[in-house]
Length: 349
Image 1 (cartoon, helix red, strand yellow):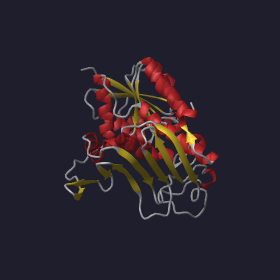
Image 2: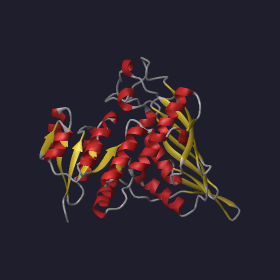
Image 3: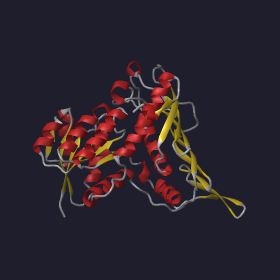
Image 4: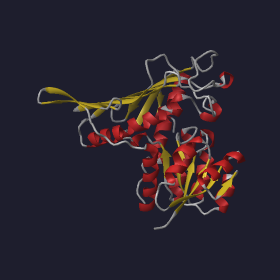
């Protein structure tokens, strides 16, 4: 079996915690190069994981090292160019979420992958949890019937990141909606079967991130450079008549953090946390609780399935096209919040 050679662009936290160690768990896969614009970070990463080559320029890495797979683990504003360069260099690419700063960039990435015949996968791992997989099996078996409504929630009571560029709109593209909302939206759309979104409305609020004196559970962020929302809400209409609401927060006065989706169907409903299925059988209402589900490292599963898809030439676990749909909805929520009206997607091109 051919050994697949992997390169990493962006050698920081997500690369070191989620990508590199899980590639190294895969049989006949070798991480042979890493890159970061901060030389000390690239060098430290290479030494930590015994990676033979490190670079500060991803173009140089792509020119000098023969690679089969590249993971792009940079901040959002640096997703597009390295991904396109790696695809054109003949590599299959996994790009961290979201696909890009906006849908226009993401669309260019997806089109490039199709043009060069390489796979573009997303670093969206939430689908791989045992709970999500159990719900997907139930949905695919028809236990929900016609899904007509869903609610996606990624809410932190106090969880404004104190590191990186999470509070800077020009580098991140937005706040919790684009950072953590992207995960629960991807999972929810997957459960719904990816109906085509047609219209979106939304509202964004910044009530905590630009204030001094707010509790920083993860340390103090830079209040002066905080230019993103700390709460967003959206409403999505789909071509098949279904609808979805979305809520995402870095900070909100709620009881606890929430990462959950709820699905309503004609034959049943379900929720992710706590994991339940609700149905009616023989004139009796039932609450079904799946039990003894295995513990799963979702990042490990996502990487392993991506590697296998490359080997077998099959569909990757989260295709770029599906990541693009999430970003199209996010763009529309931000646009609706700015303009104060519903956004019709087919009028936006």
